[in-house]
Image (cartoon, rainbow, N blue to C red; front, side, top):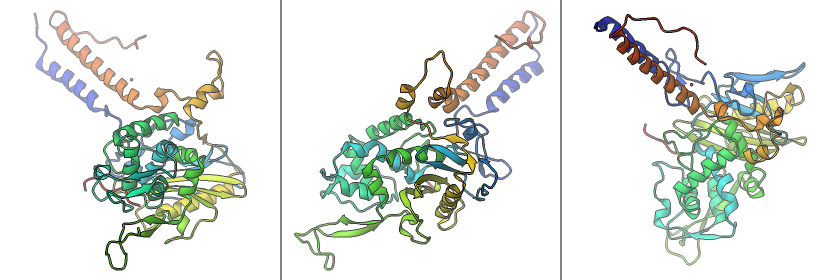
Length: 420
């Protein structure tokens, strides 16, 4: 009985190792080009909302007379009609990136409908535990009471992670809230999103996309309270029972002013955008600057999301304004490249008979097109099959001469704050 030659054994083992190393077995939201070290989008992304939205690069279908799309620096962006859901143009719309505080829109979609604005909560020490170092804070104090209205102003205007954690406590805790946010993302068909922290603070594995953030904004703006909070430029926030001039205790509770960190709404550092409704901005080290904005003009409402533009002052607002300007000019002269999908429940309710084929079937996306994990599972399975085949081949060489395999195919810094 002959034993396999050492060189043959080494070749097989090298082949198996190369196969396993040829592609990651876990999905990565972004990867770096070895030549530039700059993140580049995956070659294939989710196709929720349309085939073209899963293709890297800028997607636009202009007609005669349509203005050119602005030349932008953002890694990902999208322009969509809030009413019709038509995506007018997009750039890497499904690229999974860190969302920063724009994730608070999903938090609001999930938690805001649960409590009356007038409900009062007294803050316990435990309510404010677990916030990331350097988190943006509105200034909530333990043992003081706040209305739900106060807390949501803290979330939307000052992007307060302390306000998020208090509301999450009222909702049954951070873990429960995260579970509900992930469930809400699934209901919205926001399949690029995975929530780890409800405030958007940088956490491993926490991702979203320009497409998903736009779905969150569109859903939220249907709620009158959401629309009110995201469109409020400034407000008074409850302070402590002390005299602000002397710092001495007082029977009267003080208050202090807070201003919305959305600069297209307030006009701080950039021009206030005409007709702006909201919605939410964010910044962390991993995310860079992120922003979703909505504006109305001549009866049309546009939604724009911009993720991680160049690190220049107010760049995220400038690029958002440029896309809004383009969208209002181009809306009647471009063909849509995709659509903002309805909720999963609505899509399933309108689904046709299984024996028929129609556009409604595309609204409910299959896991193969939206959840990359199955693709990577297939890669892993293929690699393991190759290893098993190699082992079998080694055994067979002990009794027979080696044969070629049948070529015919057989019948897959440390985390930073969510500041704005």
